[in-house]
Length: 143
Image (tube, rainbow, N blue to C red; front, side):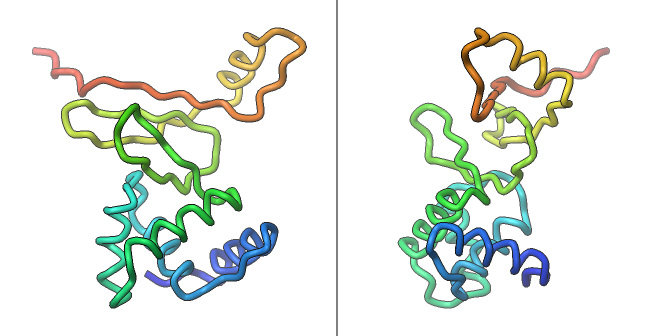
């Protein structure tokens, strides 16, 4: 998948803010992340990247992802001792990890929920980020 003009410009501006330049590799890896928003690991992004970019190395993909995190266009999602996953969804949301499949889903957090969470903090604290992760499995269907 090729990036749209808007996505390419967003990537370029985000990278420039932290002193980096857009490259063909960065554009390709970013497009891979946006194509299937399933919270892939570095290894999964690398496997997908190889389809449209012969010779791209695991180290290059890792460096691209780290650059995206550094410039704030991708978030890291971590679960205990598992490999880091990457999420390009920057809207306020939580994650749900299905224990049966290992799949990670985005869960929207409406603004009233976010406000309630902010009010739980002591007055002298202001959150810079709110990260919520749910763990569980799909409930059985009712009979």
